[in-house]
Length: 181
Image (cartoon, rainbow, N blue to C red; front, side, top):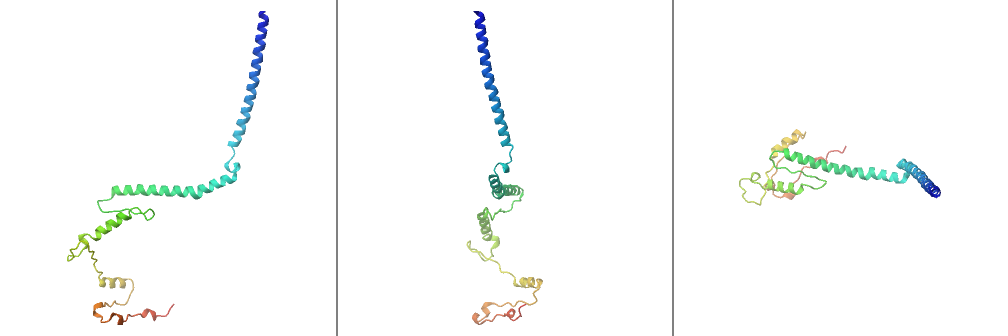
């Protein structure tokens, strides 16, 4: 009887081992086939995979993403430059402005207004705090500047108070008499 049970046990073992090995061999073959297919798909270049999608992504990258990245890098570099310069500037009033972002415009306006209204820019006779006085340009200096630029005629200074009727005053318009080239 032991012989019969040993034979049945061996037969059952061989049957189970054979079935398991058959399933595993089929499983490994399937896995190897799928790995080969995936490797072929992964190895495909984007242009060969789907040319339209690849072209769209490439064009978006070149026309949208790169300019935006460039602007971001420009802003970061500008901010870093401003920080570096601010640390090394002497103790003088200064404002960094940007025409693109509008940064610093309000500070510049306030600084200019403060300087225009400071006591050093007012004449001695003016004591009112709300008045701004501008110094007149020396017209002799203007005449010398014009001569340096090649003007050969002297400027005639006419005070409006000396003219009796300003509407009757005739301006010299000799440039209209010159022939057109």
